[in-house]
Image (cartoon, rainbow, N blue to C red; front, top):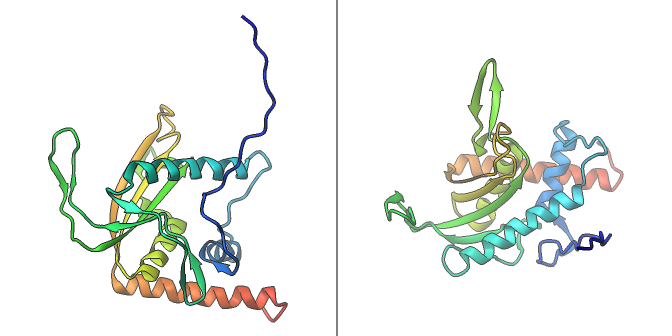
Length: 211
């Protein structure tokens, strides 16, 4: 047996969807995080490019798995001059257990946004001596993003398919989590008002104007 390590760079392919110019929703969300000290603090050991690529691989795997059955990958959506790129748009259908055929979720027939996430975040957090489940609705970035997509698409329903690489960090076993979230009209509209407010603030700073 002979072994030789080949030092090839990882092929970073991106999302596979061409990124246009203009103001993107993700740019505004990042700006909001920076303005409010919520941005991720990189200690120099995190490979952000590799992390993003892992997320794109998860997205592509789900796109292929759900093609023609759950959702389609749309082109970029422009809303109030802001570029939005939801992972999928589909119909809120009944969801069955594939093994038992038991009805798990009663669909509404509404248009729905699909969002896929690949994360190293834990599914739980510690409160005292207890481990408490952390629902996706506690993730500010996730909720800001999907509420914005709901506004742009014209719906109030989102399906999230999240892959937690290290699960709850007790066994390091990957945990996939799927959930459906409904938003009120007020939640969606107030979120979009915040996005527009920070878009204008971001543009002012980029132009070198008053802060």
